[in-house]
Image 1 (cartoon, rainbow, N blue to C red):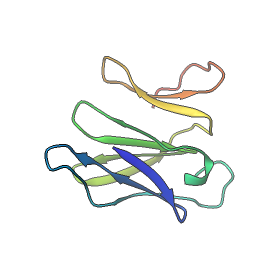
Image 2 (tube, helix red, strand yellow):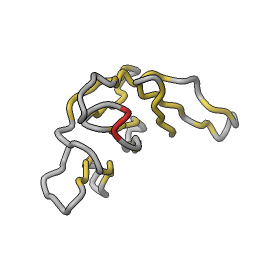
Image 3 (tube, helix red, strand yellow):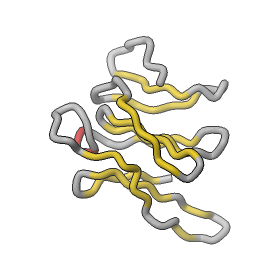
Image 4 (cartoon, rainbow, N blue to C red):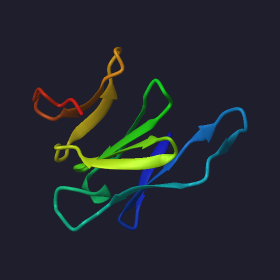
Length: 105
């Protein structure tokens, strides 16, 4: 899975090893709104895939996940300098810089 920013939007692509090709570009619906704390310009986008094969992406304050073919979004509550992870129990975590606790998305 690959996520990248272009022209104020965040896009997702998936590599199919069987077909040996990348999927078509998908718009995650995440946008830069002009705030200094959100959007694809705020840092490197993160992508993880859950047990159901759904991609989850995080960049700036913006978080999105794909469910039943649709991208859903919400404010992550994080600002920047973070990472996205999934623990062994399948819980999704937004991990903040500085050792803060309570980063569970």
